[in-house]
Amino acid sequence: MEPAEAATQLGTFSVGHRRGGLFDAARDNRSLPYDVWYPSDMALDDDSERTRYPLLGPIGLDSEVAADDLPVSKARAFPLLVFSHGFGGVNFQSIRLMEFLASHGFVVVSAEHTGNTSSDFSDTIEQAGRRRVPDVSFMIDSFLAMNDIQGDDFFERLDPTLIGVLGHSFGGGTALGTVAGFYDVPPDERVRAVMPISATVFDRFTDSALASVSEPVLFLGGTEDVSVPIENHDYAFDALTGAEVVYQVDITGAGHEHFAAICDIGNTLIDNGLGQDTWPSIGAEALLRPYENTCSESAFPIAVAQRIQNTYAVAFFRRHLLGESEYDFYLREPWSLENEPDVVYRSKSIE
Image 1 (tube, rainbow, N blue to C red):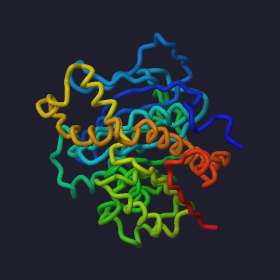
Image 2: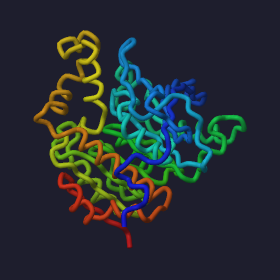
Image 3: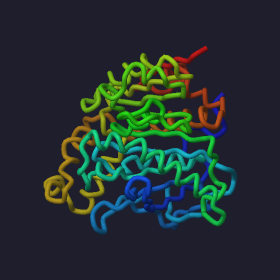
């Protein structure tokens, strides 16, 4: 039976959003700006001002769901999810997913991996890799510290035993690395479930590292991904021999960028008079190829890919962090076969 709070729909909470910055004193005061999305009990109406994610000067991407600085819900202590963005990307790349998870009762924080962002490409791939899992661990440390500070907005609003990680592309590898180790950095033992999306696995993990993973894992990707081919997930699925449960969700026809806000960003620039011919001059040249491949009428519908992403993310984390077994409803092959014709689905578990 489908859960009363369906994974296919926004949850019952309003979505608050804040942007902040932290410095890791243990790593030469490494700067980590972040965005955080969280559940709120404050009702929003059509006239309520929504979050604007900055793109270029006054131009921003307007949220349909989130609002800045809402009070954090006091309903209970919530799970904490950390999101890791792609190589040379932006930390708000997967806005719709972050907002969707927050509406279902998750606090979701996403840091900019300094030195490996669209505006700061100073790290080599090895430097970026070695810093990724420590960045995630530092965000966990920082938010759990807020959870312990009386008077902080997140005071006693987080459950320190319920921590998950998800990410896209190199960030998907980072998510897997928090339980398998990444670039010689050991895993973070506090992480209880991970969702790698279009994840880089080849040449990042040994068979023994993958076999050491015991936590639940859900892989999500597209069959037309030429940047990180779906074979990365095929290999990892088979190599995760010790994980409690492993899911693989392949979307037939989706590409690498179908899981990010690339069409929202591109369309916002166009709507503000910045057509594709201007993108190289404003530093958005990296959008050109993926925009055409992802957002044109001939491409797989990005709204469908992101709806599938949101559904499986909510079902997975509600099941494997919160222990809500009714969300197995979405994590079994019959539901996929009946409801998601574009999905190739498989799973395995240790009996």
